[in-house]
Length: 300
Ligand code: GUN
Image (tube, rainbow, N blue to C red; front, side, top):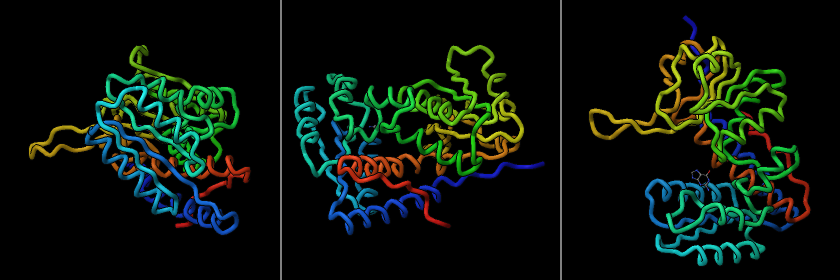
C-alpha cells in the first residue's frame, strides 16, 4: 500500500520567514526603513491571546516592528474605530490586523471596512476581496495564500487541475476558490448544502477542506493520488482530558489514498503567520513606492 507524502508546512513556513527576514534587512539597509505591523486584540479570549502573541513574536523575529494594542472586552465600537483611525494615519504602521472574533457589541464588518485598504494585511476589506475576484493586485488573505504556496510548491503549475474547496467562509473558502481560479484550476466551491458531497470530493485533484468539522472528510472521499490541504484546526476530547488537535480530514484513512496531504498540526497552520509577515512586507514596500520583492522560501 502506498502512503501520501506529508507536506511539511512548519518547515516551509520557517524557510519563508527566513527569506522575509532577509528582504526586511535589505529594505532597512537600502532605504533605512523597517516595516511595522499593528495587531489589535479586543477582550481576553485565550486562543486569540496566543495568536496575537505569536504574531508579535514572529514579526520581531523577522526584524519588523510590532505594535500590540490590547483593549478591554468592554471597548465600544467608537473607541475601536478611533484606534483604527490613529493606526491608519501612523506612518510607522504598514499593516493593521484586528484579531477576530470581536465582542458582540462591535460590528466586525464595520471595523474591517474602517482599516485602510493599503494596510489591510488580512485581506478582509471588501475592496481587497473584490480585487482578488476581478484579478487585481490587492492584499490576499493569509491562510489562502499559505495554502496556494504549499500547492504550487508541490504541484508547480496548477492549470487545468480539478479543485474542490469545502467551505465558503469569507476568510478561507471564498478567497481560496478565487485564488485557485486565478491559477486556472476548474474550481468547485462545496458547502453544507452541497448534494453528494463525498462524490464531489472524489472528483478533486486538489481538495481543500475548510469547514471546521473534525475529521469530516474520510479516506474514501479522496481520489487516489490527490493533493489534500487541510485547513481545519479542531480540538477533540481524549481520555486524559487534554484534548488533541485534528483537521477537517480523517488523516489516518486519507493518508492511505492521497498523493500528498498536510498534517494538523504542522501543515497549513504555520503558513498563516508567515503569510501575514509577507503581506506586511508587501504592504510596506507599496506604501513606500518600492517594488515589492518576490519572496521565495529559503533553500532547505
Ligand atoms: N482569527 C482567526 N484567524 C484570523 C485571521 O486570519 N485574522 C484575524 N484578524 N483574525 C483571525
